[in-house]
Amino acid sequence: MDQLFAEIAGIGYPAIEIWGRGDDFISFCEAAASHGLRVVSISGHNSLPDGLNNAANHDRIAAELHESIDVAAANGVDGLICFSGNRIPGMSEQEAIANTAAGLRRAAPHAEAKGVNLNLELLNSKVNHAGYQCDHSAWGLAVVQQVESTNVKLLYDIYHMQIMEGDVIRTMTENLDAIGHIHTAGNPGRNELDDNQELNYRGICRALSSAGYAGYVGHEFHPRGDVVDALRQAFELCNV
Picture (cartoon, rainbow, N blue to C red):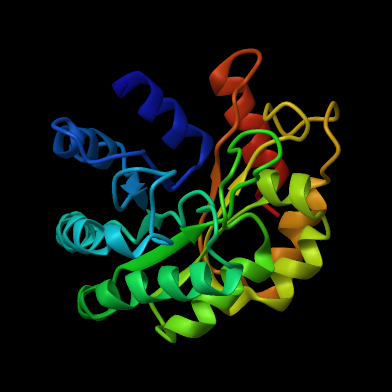
């Protein structure tokens, strides 16, 4: 881990993100900090498929988010990833949106007080996450609009939204205020951001920069070759 962090910092990256906040979270943060790296995003609550769209989960998720917000604030983490959960048979889209918004609304005041964003992640339900409900930008934006909190935003995953709807530059730049974090990966394959996939990441990042996006872009791909080489190539491509 220490060697990888040294390589990441040497490339020029200012930050990293990890999935959870397990027993090794503090040592992970300390190791990153020793190389001048921040940890800027972690998962906010348990269970991706059984999430905020189910009101029966709200007490559990509210408690998990409260603890995660405190951990994030104490360690300089900007955002927590949140999940709608999978579609529930018999539940309308509007009810699911309202439930998800209600669950996030419970946690929003504490997030605002601590300066931590709750980022609802957009995922594809076609290839990787069958049944996931927040699988289109319009769905996630409807939730954010209902919550009405400056600290509830979207995690816009370019790879996932390319699969579901495309038109990623227009969607992101027209809704920049609602985006708290961004993920990348090449499509198809979820591999490097190279010429073997269909997304023009140099053009995407140039458009985000021109539009004034000031958040982080996290690389969430699976390198086919050397990890450090892939991260160096992604940095050079996106640092526009």
